[in-house]
Amino acid sequence: MTMMSFSTSTYALVEKDIRSEVRTRYAFNALLMFVVTAVSTILFALRSDNPSTALLSGMYWVVVFFTAMSGLSRIFVSEEERGTVLVLQLIASPTVIYFGKLLFNSALTLVLTTAVTILYVLFFPGFVINSYEILFLTVLLGSLGFAASATIIAAIIAKAGARGTLYPVLSLPVLIPLLITVMNATARALAGEPLVNALGELQVLLGYLLVMVGGSYLLFDYVWKD
Amino acid sequence: MKFVKFGAVTLVTLVIVAGIAIPTSLQPTSLFQFPVIPGLEEKARNIFFHVPTAWTTVVAFLVSMYYGIQYLRKRDIEYDIRSVSSASLGFLFCFLATVTGSVWAKFNWGSFWNWDPRETSIFVLLLIYGAYFALRSSLEVEETRAKLSAVYSIIAGLTVPFFIFVLPRMMGGLHPGSKGDPQGSGPVVSFTMSGNMLFIFFMSLLGFNLLYVWMLNVRVRLAKIEYQQSSEQA
Image (cartoon, rainbow over the protein chains, first blue to last red):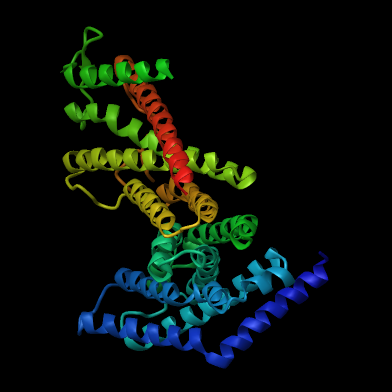
């Protein structure tokens, strides 16, 4: 396949997913409401306590994790439910499907982390971003790595029963290296450390992203084709 | 296999008896005395059980992943049987390593669990095994089950280098090989053990590995018979 047709067909797939998302706003609305629900539950639990920055940066990613786990599997599960898997298998190569779905999920995760960031800044007095460059790079690389793992796991569980429960169970062990790293890096961003201090974490995040995308790219054929 | 079976039984028995019975002494004079390691004392004996079980866990995981890859390449159900048999043994050894490690942590570091990087890694390995079996039980069709669980074990295996090489170097911890350890941080911990301890340690490593090979052999044979019976009934 030539580069040209690869990018056009990937673009066409992403456009199709966006169009069907805009029609129903299923994933978008559900994710945003989930974020609001999760953040308000934490606010109820804390009452008027002022949690430490380490706790806040941890809980930031707890919200991201569970919200993502409620919505990101939709990308493959909806194809299975609508019975459109066969059509996709016929008209596009697995590589195109994988990168199309990965792009859509990455965009969705970025929207999600942006929403969580805005809510945390508004509602938690302790969540003050003192180092914007660390937070920006952490959230960007963290979201992309998150989407990479979530997409391949979503492809796996779309074929299984008990999807909803299984999704976080399968994802958590794979995501733990990422979660530990982003939690550390976010704590550094809140503490206002210089960018050099977070370089180690950012390298791990970049490495994680490359390993996951590479591994998924090689394995996606086996998951996708029946 | 006979050699493996008797070798495993002999070595593990020898290690259990020698590892527990040999006394420690401040100035060891004979081969049948262990030196006292400051800070560890009698607790040092756990090294004959904790490290080999942890090592076998990793071996079992890699073997399971290897057969998973072989299944994806050749689509022969026998590889899937081998893969899942190795994974279930890995789960058993992982549990043993967690328990021996946790007991050791209680008496050396003061608590059963304190999220040391190594404790985190072994916990994640338990989660991976748990997720692997949960995934398998939710897939009905045999080929899909074999295929997807192989893919999952490879994806999960991709994260293992982060736990072995990256995170212990970034996070401080109490386990040997953590960041700031004077004996060097890294996956391979250089032990300061006396000759006779080292001998029993390697006997134990070999014994537990042989035990794993023998148990895997039995499990694979059993699983094959079960598979044949279920396909004859169908």
